[in-house]
Length: 370
Image (tube, helix red, strand yellow):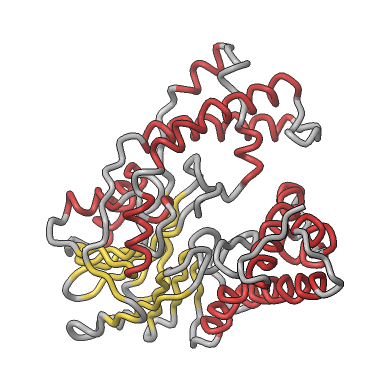
């Protein structure tokens, strides 16, 4: 995704260097980032390599498919350092070359490790949709200066929280929450530093609707790549029919519903994916799902938001702020958050963002202004 999956972290994080000059703060600022990778075998020749918190998101999922003639890697994470750790895990699984790297979409936590695979495998093909490649080319130069620009504000917000013991909304932070903020800030600094040296490596093979890599050799997985609307347009999902595994990138947004395209289009893609014959669904972030409950919940949320927005518009309410005030999605909150306090705090912001998109979609992208 482009926003941190724990948005509170960034609000919290907006504060350290300005107010924190203690020895502890100075020592953690230079602590090296050590990638966390957890390997899970999903099927014969199919592995999930899950990365831990990296300063941008709480974790990323990379899926590796090992066939007779080589390896396919789906998404390369947020940092080259994480991608190097992923490559190290692949080397423990097989000595076959990586032939394909698939980038699900343009958000930086899904392709910032591409350079690692380009350096290790000169003949590797990087695959994405035509639309995703266009976004990658248009946005690739944006990330480094943007994150560098944000760092002082993030440091300032963190420093304020350390000094006051309160969140940006005035809530008192527990000692554990304050410790978590410090851990995040340490990672975030190293993340921003690493983004400044990423060598953007772009797709070399693109497609529009569907790309089948097929069976190459006896006993190989058939690999079906499909373009869908996820939290970005032109998102690639990977379907492995023999293994009954679906890899969604951020077409499935966990733990909270997040999107930027029109919500009804995203919901339609989710309903289509839910009809596939699968035993495992791997989102871009978070746990492997063994049923369709979450994917259907996200689709239901998006569809319901659009329906409620249209009711508001026909009251009639014309201003976005009035519609956002009128549309209450709180009946979905606990279904997503399971009453986790941090997610409960974040839910309203996520819901308000989807209401805005539903408002624009329902009014032909026209926003009435006061």
